[in-house]
Image (cartoon, rainbow over the protein chains, first blue to last red):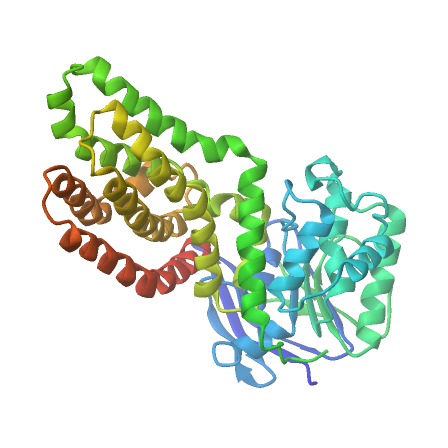
Amino acid sequence: MSLRLQARRLACERDDRWLFHDLDLEIRAGEILRVEGPNGSGKTTLLKILAGQPMEHAGEVLWNGTPLRRSRSDFLANLLYLGHAPGVKAALTPLENLAWYQALAGEPGDEASRLGALERIGLAGFEDLPAAQLSAGQQRRVALARLELTPRLLWVLDEPFTAIDRQGVAALEARLEAHAERGGGVLVTTHHELRASSGLRRLTLGEGGGGVER
Amino acid sequence: MSSDEPAGGLSLAWRATLRRDLVLRLRRPGEVLNPLAFFALVITLFPLGLSPSASLLATIAPGLLWVAALLAALLSLDGMFRDDAEDGSLEQLLLSPQPLPALAMAKVAAHWLLTGLPLALMAPLLGVMLSLPAGSYGVLALSLALGSASLSLIGAIGAALTVGVPRGGVLLSLLVLPLYIPVLIFGVGAVQAAAQGDGVAAHLAILGALLAAGLTLAPFAIAAALRIGLNG
């Protein structure tokens, strides 16, 4: 299974201000691309565009060399996107939340796999509580349990470290590295400094200009 | 890591989305009961405000029942996609490998099962209060069941379009009310015809036709509206 997500001459304007323009980037298997930049520099918008969400923009996104609008179903079947809002229903328990996500991905799944994923993410004992009773960090962990549960090549994660405690951050970082080593790709925005690893690249979005890749 | 979804993927996702929405609504019973309470209150007030005369009430009963049910259904529309948009699960729905029009229909079905259907089942009881002529109770429930499904479908388009608008309730009403009028006319027509002992088949057939048109066209309109509503 190949993984190559490219963006060509991407530009996005908000309120007569360029968030970014002429932005080219590429993610291949084994890479972690960290998008950084000050608040309001367009990180979330860039991630939404790259994840194929409806968002006004110029330029082109290609999945394995084909424009996204033609390869959309194949792209979505390989994508796991975690947005700024965790997408966890407060009235449902973590188990019910995960069951819906599994079904949405087209997998029947089973209770044992969901329990296992919740345990590995550090939520053992909270499986049957409504998510409303969990802390912000625990709710974020429910969303992160999907990384364990649904095998997808490309992870697009918007601020996944928000509200996560120190051990959780280290575990998540290790999980991202392991995913890249297994041949997956990760696109992540965060203000947290990631450990240097072989696959890590950085893209800095700045004031009104294009992105600078380092 | 394969890109091939199991063949049953769509029906699995559809059923899971329907079940999830039903569970979510039932865990907040207030939201399910609100339109029903509104419906009952409005109908209870009319005999008090107008006149308890059975003959007067019976002539206006079909229109009153239908208008009150329509407004009750309208009240419940706003939350259809808004909660999902706020907690991020709507964007996950859009990024599911399953076709969005089909998944949106699961949400509409859940809305109808816990709004339109209860309203239709409750209407005959309120019909008694308005001295609705015997023999038109079945038609009242049937016309409301058919009509409210169309209302849910049309309303979902408006709810999807206004999902990004904070407090878009009034805008939503303005958008969908004109589209509700044909359903209202033929719904009331069916009940009036039944009350007068005329044939109801034509009215019900048109309600059915409106629903069939809604079922085929609305899913795509809802999906397109969601993409517009979430843009930006």
